[in-house]
Image (cartoon, rainbow, N blue to C red; front, side, top):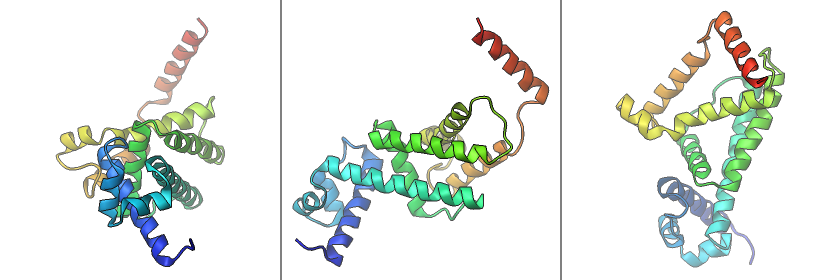
Length: 200
């Protein structure tokens, strides 16, 4: 069967509907029928394009992973935050859900992010004795903001996963990262204490 513009449009609609439902309900909570209905297609057409729900999930993970890589490369090159579009918000929420659900591609996303982080770290003047741990913990700290969306929303009084609450969270994170929370003396003492524990 040859591909047509309508095939490609249907494929994208199915993917977008799946991402929205997977994000809202989790992988187990979103059925093929629900996804097809949300996309305005038949379950048969969904299976034609993706084979199964797992095949669709793989395609969603792959698409989101590619978008994350694109955004990371753009940030590394420009050091500027790009436009915060509804697509960016949905993709971020989907990837957080993917990690929570134990998706292999979610783990791959985090692993690739850490690898790119090491490249970025090498281009800076930041100092660390363990580059892999530095970027992995930094990534986990940033993801924690989105994993704790409900808790942040409750404290802030607005949805931290949607504008303007999302911007409020990002602004706070920029302010945190823009200034040291420890004096050099405090950091040196803490590192020496950790080193002593490591030598026990």
